[in-house]
Amino acid sequence: MTPLTLALFFLLLSLPFILYRLLRGPEWTDRLIATDLLALSLSAGILLLKHESGWGWDRDAAWILMITSFVGTIGASFAFNSVLRAREGKEVKRSDRNE
Image 1 (spheres, one colour):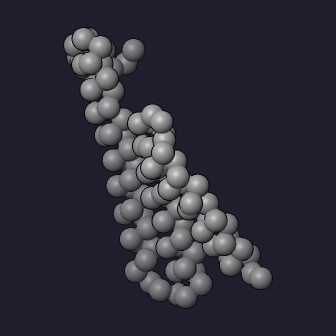
Image 2 (spheres, rainbow, N blue to C red):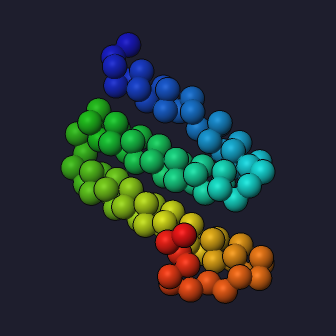
Image 3 (cartoon, rainbow, N blue to C red):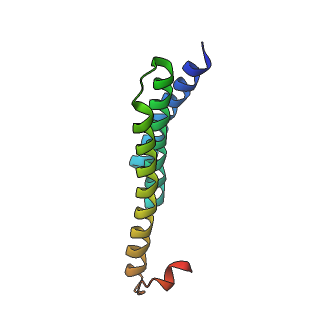
């Protein structure tokens, strides 16, 4: 068994645990982290398969997936923070975000 095959095996082995946390996470933060981890695992799988088979275009797709996932996670964090603060009755101002 080659190291790349072993890495792909462990990557596939982690997917049910990520999906469990995505579906059953008690808090929105658990689901958000699981979504980010799922995108990262998908990107790693694409890169591993690219290295095994020699496809050329998959590296760009993996980078785009990683960057959009990262930006989406940051955006969702700010959105959820605003919603939670609005539920508490606090006004959300730009200066309040640094607290």
